[in-house]
Length: 128
Image (tube, rainbow, N blue to C red):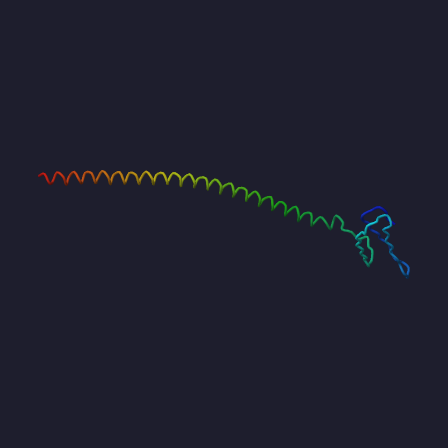
């Protein structure tokens, strides 16, 4: 018997043939309560997992944990290296952009100077 509890687990062995009854009472409460009832039929054994059963699993889990930590370290290193590479590439792209702008201005300036000199040469030719 359990009273005033939300859950209960009863284990007993039915050694005698006959009818067994399970009685549920909700006399203390005015409202309805939900009940989940499960019966397990089978042989009760005291065989539980021992330390010798768990040692291979423990070793395997430790190995998996070590592998995950190694993988995490490698990924962290790779992400750091990629971030460093991205920063270097952004700096290179910025430098290349300004160099291209400077080259374009130089070409436009030289084209203007050449146009000016060609016009002067053609003007002096008419005079001669």
